[in-house]
Image 1 (cartoon, rainbow, N blue to C red):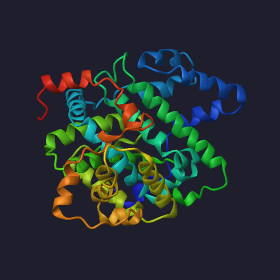
Image 2 (cartoon, helix red, strand yellow):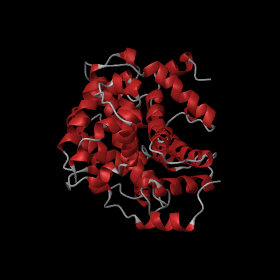
Image 3 (tube, one colour):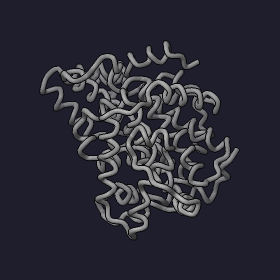
Image 4 (cartoon, rainbow, N blue to C red):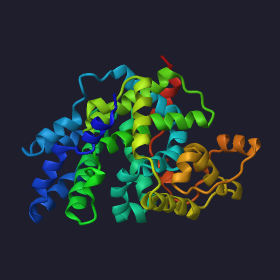
Length: 352
């Protein structure tokens, strides 16, 4: 199903709707300022009305804010409930599993490495990704009052701008495919959905197949709105595994930039103040445990010998809860309103 020929073709494709729009606005300085102003005013989904008044933006806005015909709203709600129940653990997994997972895909990580902001400011990368996740996971994410549609549109434009600047430079190698191409976007979508579920299970959390599928369905909706090819958004657990295995087999390899990105992330965690030395010393073995030795070796995550007792302690450790500095991404994400999530969890039956 996910043959080399098919995935090679997907590496040549990106997001033409967003790319065409960026090319139009970046043609001259006046239009670029205009786009910057439009994006600055884009907060909630209701702000998309003004974007649609720009003729050149309407097609992309519609693409990023119209649920696909195959969307199952009941399943989307249960996907949101799943996130609500495990929000803190999922946020924890973002920095210790999901982002390093993406860095292991050597060709796809090139564009992240070439972006100095991402390489030199991992805290902002964590914060931006965490805030995006909260926006698209919120119960009102796809209502006028929510931020799901607007956040997805902004991400598409940010990715298109990254492609524009990357291709305009001299460091990109066409053998890597297009920057932020379809295969790489599918891999990122898996990192935030299926790989997250795998991480929860490694932490000892029991996740039913139905819960997994609701969460993956919600992320498939987000992926579709983000411009990912429907074929790269598998529905069944079997096909999700096949896609992940295919991308891992094709793209996972050691690279200087993957190691550098991971080191930047590790260095950031080393600067964070924690409530105890035990927690401070635990994030590296926890990262390695979650990634698995093979992937951790690709990224040069240090090897540490763990006893069964140590391993159990890692599984039950609420790592990010002990962040003490207000500059940490977890602290800022915690400012989000938990009330709507907790009410959902208390009143709903999740599985099934």
